[in-house]
Image (cartoon, rainbow, N blue to C red):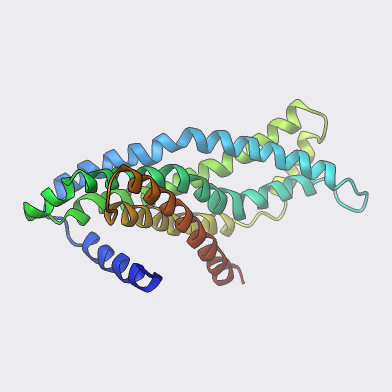
Length: 246
């Protein structure tokens, strides 16, 4: 299947996915379950990675900007802008593409090869809407919370380095965090996170839903979902940055 055929098949699947659910009660039940699986279960890895990245950026900035011409608060400012503009949206979603994307693709792909999706279609149920829509909407709903949590704990990781070591004073770090703060950066990151969440969940669902063969093909579909969603996230990141910050 070439790229044009894949785009067409993906578009047709999304049209089926975002139809009006036959039973809203069932949709909301699955929606809540998906928030648990994709959101709350991803919180721990988000917090851990963000804290360590914040700490590492702080160390690297101090070591590589030892210049009397640079102000003392440059480290805190650089940590803040790096986390808000890129890490807590783009890099975090690339990480979650591996966790959430592979999980969604494997789950739906297993249902496809075990003919559970065919059984839903035979019963007259819109299987794409029933299986995919709760996953996509749940991940798009929960990603702003993960993005904001990543920002907070990333900055907190840098603060811990300032507090427990002598590489930079707490006052210098905090002043840099506050210096010329632009609240739009948070809005920008949240919007990017929502767009990336849709890309991850929808592409992973597409590869799982269209898989053919056995368990080996399910594993290949999961890999393809992560790789392709990561590439499209990078492309979308460039486009959104150009549109929103230029």
